[in-house]
Image 1: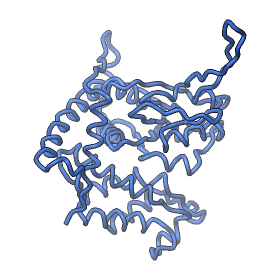
Image 2: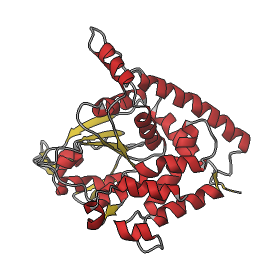
Image 3: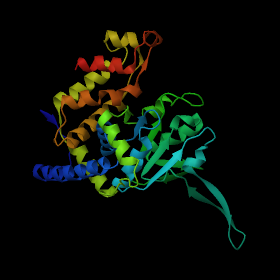
Image 4: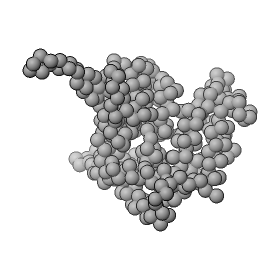
Length: 334
């Protein structure tokens, strides 16, 4: 049995044809990224899944792992208008959102004019997001959830599609501010970037230290990306997958009957985590060439979707446990 969410005006054959066309587009996007980013297949997959699902992603990794390069490449390959904001302690909300300035015409009449900030882009790179103050970080809350900003009481809609890809250094904590839980929850996934394997690193050495270097090329349009995002929302979800998502997310919350969770988790994921898992599972299925998600998609996506939506108790941290350990145990229970 499947729970199907689709446009009633579109038949099954047409949907299959749309999916096959989307698969070709996704393959071209993967090839375009692979010409510039070597190795890191899992990172590329998860980042693309987040974008295909229509969400935002937090990229966490030490310096030098091509986080910035990946975001720049995505902007070029997907044809999106992209901007980069370097987050620093002195960055103000108006530096991101924009501000109103007073102007005077020839007759001496004064009026305010809104000058948009860099957030008015289809792909916003928030570099080292945890270096800005909480006041500045909060400037992103409304935009990431509601896709518009309010300045001086006036609403300004953001372009579509709108995605935020933020980077964060997990090691250097001096001069940083932890991201508030409300903002972390707005990221569809937290994607951990690890060191490349030896073959990928060998290719990096050979390909990037010569006279010429591979350049990214545009293969998709933002409008086509939106069409694929709508297709993903119409994909059927088997009842077993729905139950697995509900079981996993609810088992990660204290007070729901899971003894390990009650002991180790201070607070767990909310309903937004279930929504994120559902959308990402659909996107991953299409990324792999399937028309419906499976339990394996839930297992593969559990860590990036849940780890930034949970917090451990002091006792669990004292024992040396991590959120990943807790999520891994919960996944085994699916």
